Image (cartoon, rainbow, N blue to C red; front, side, top):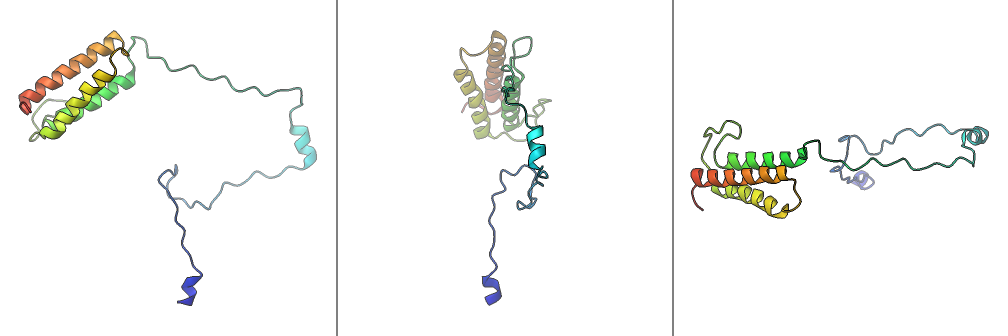
Length: 147
């Protein structure tokens, strides 16, 4: 037992590790130190100023006005709503029994996005959102019932 007292344990949080479960004690090798004379020669002259790199312009939606991310958000919500209704998201075939609670949650999420994005969408995005919302609400009533 006295041998175990000297041994401790280490707790480390790896939730945000990029590479995985490598040992955290391993550090990247530091560059070899240059002699002072070489360091001064390699240093830029004082007249040179380092300017910050120019920042990239904000991402604009692709030509046509619709952002791909918005379409993907709608596709994800629509697919989950259809699956919860017991329908295959791609073919529309019945794949199981509907889960009314989850189906309603996803249909309500699309309606929530529609409400929150009002006035911030292009005409095409607004039309797409309106179509998806009405289609999902109609399918919900047909497949699950009024609830």
